[in-house]
Image (tube, rainbow, N blue to C red):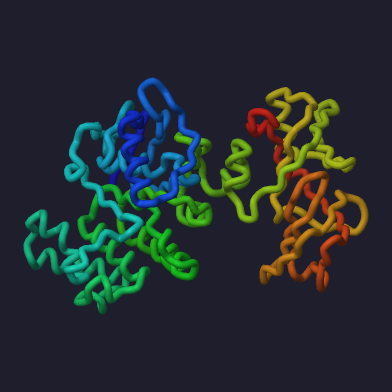
Length: 393
């Protein structure tokens, strides 16, 4: 139960450290991480100017591709990495030089990090044993946590006798018995199969409602981010791209990267023209003109945006097949996805996806077949082709 604030936090790895880690990865046969991190005279900048104020009991998700700096940020909050510049506050107290064990945080790791020689009970009790809690207090807290996580029947087992999902519950149980001010979770579900990930996401949502603590969660999976977070922090190459609620980043992406990263299937992008006629705006794609919604027109007018070439973004689920008129598309692949059919098409010189509800779909769409589609002006996003910035914002 705590607020967390990061003010202009940066992480710079000296060249010697970067080269040593590269040698360690090479020795283990691990694939090199592909990043576009900034290189300065001081070293490689892994996290750049990270600013956020996290409210008490808020659930924040850091999301982005591998190597974007999200796990490094989490480790700085945990005290496992030194902060090169900037300030970290937990409950208003400066934490830059406070030892990890004094920060009253708990962390759940990707690989569970359980002691194989200890039982589930002993693993969960371990942090309380280190604090020299009374035996009756330890027993009460461990059993309460086990009941919350539905692992009471496994308390006498060793980790090797558990499934991946059960081990992750034990790791979470070990973290919550301490009743920490802040709970940190570093890609805790990435080692689980798809079915278990869905189940564990639901368990984490339930857990969040039952314990009063602040959560900071790291993932590369945008589905986890959208379902778990009160707010999402989208990162790329060490920089924050956008902070907002799941609905905000989905409906109003700040730039092309966010638009393409959030949402599944990914947003369609086309080369188009923004048309201004007085105080009205529309977009023209492949000869088809679509008036923009009143809210979009208002935001563009506030910025006095002229007519210009744009990158047009339209989400696949916001496209509609049309009998006459609209944008011509050639079907490449048709995927039956249960409740909908995903048509992979070529339209206006670009690859795109059209999501067709099963009730509206034909029996089949053959490769090479032509279809037409439309979209509403409220669903159109216009971006600067050079900077990638959303022109509305």
